[in-house]
Amino acid sequence: MPLHLTKVAFACDSVDFLRSRLEARAPLGGVALTTRYLPKRHEEIVGGSLFWILKHQLVGRSPILGFGEAEGGRTAILLEPRLVLVQARPKRAHQGWRYLEAADAPPDLGDLEGGADELPPSLMGELAGLGLL
Image 1: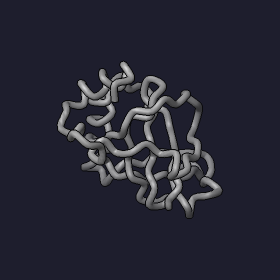
Image 2: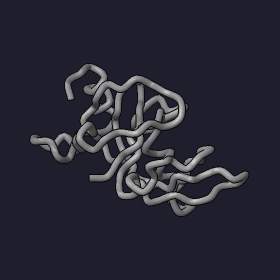
Image 3: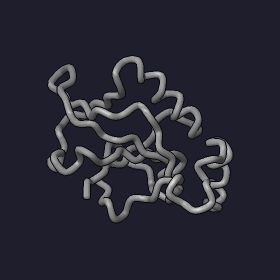
């Protein structure tokens, strides 16, 4: 099972805004987040996802494609420019990224019974904020 990362969706106030921000970078060939250092467990992370924290909850994930070099000797975390919504789970905000074991990762909303993936993202965000998802 792959290892995952968590990161705060900085300057995002909604799931819709986060999704549009990721999709806007799709024509550029994907999303590259830069960090100072290559994660020590980077080989375990490829094939995993970066889980986004929004308003103190894990709300979605972007699959990690790999790692590359960025300007100034930094490392780029290469992501698919799509947001897969997950069952909201409380998560305290933090700086940078943190590891998330696969066993602790929330399930995708599409994997839940009842077709929660058919709800509009704005409604899912409201329901998650109320603890109903």
